[in-house]
Length: 152
Image 1 (cartoon, one colour):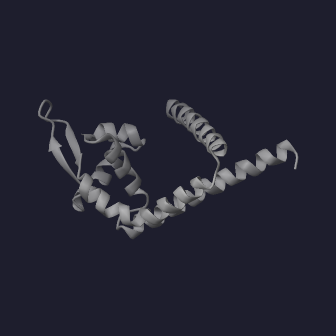
Image 2: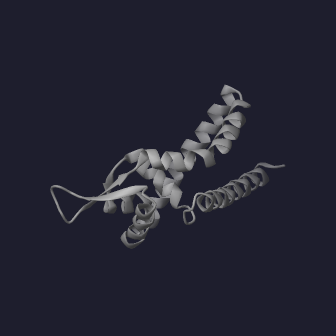
Image 3: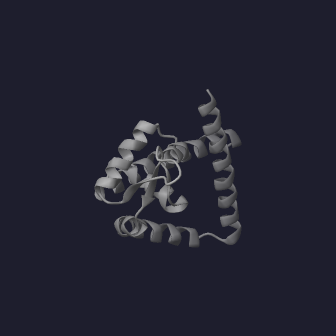
């Protein structure tokens, strides 16, 4: 295979990976009683902790209306609670229930995470460095594209 054909093959594999990832997360969301990929947004709350609804909108790229619906769904399952900001009552702070979120998500992800760890352990350190370089560079490209799309 020539280099141009190999690049096309890699692009198609990357697209297939992205599409399959969406399918996986849709399935996981349904399994734990959430709509679509809502559970992925819980990851932002776990990583960053409490934040305003506006901050969550900026972080996720969702509209403020979509974030309101998302928070409503999470609150109905007691995964988050709303609290008025003590310094600005117009702002609402979203406080994640980390324990409940972890208890909900961990059992569904465990096999997938274990399989992924097993896959990574099958690579040499040199190969892992190549994979790391790919992921870091791909993330930079995606971050730039997100910025470019949001500017338009």
